[in-house]
Length: 152
Image (cartoon, rainbow, N blue to C red; front, side, top):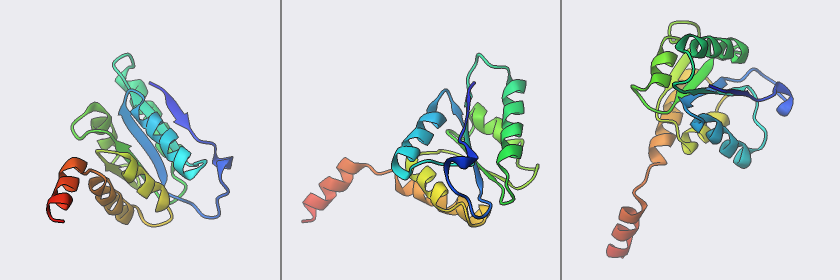
């Protein structure tokens, strides 16, 4: 497992923001953070925790708890996982009763960009908006284009 935390000095911060943690299989979360940073520039108050079979579950849970404590600046923490029912999600769900934490599954780049754009609001609204952005980002492009050509 690896943990990547972005420096709080990476962006000037005027108010507390919702913290963001990606908890995913292998290095998927770290790659998504790099892609978001490529688009948005330097990010802060975020981390990626990779889950793999070579790491003890207790160590992963410890790192996740530490990340939540470190990144909760007063607005809560959004935990984004790759797949509902997977180990990253199951480990993250244990934190729902511990503070202001939300777990959103099925993370993709449109969802992550929405999260980084809305961290000044409240956690419940951000969760709904990010879920919707993630779903809208999934398009069968060929099907869409064929229907547009067919319908003129």
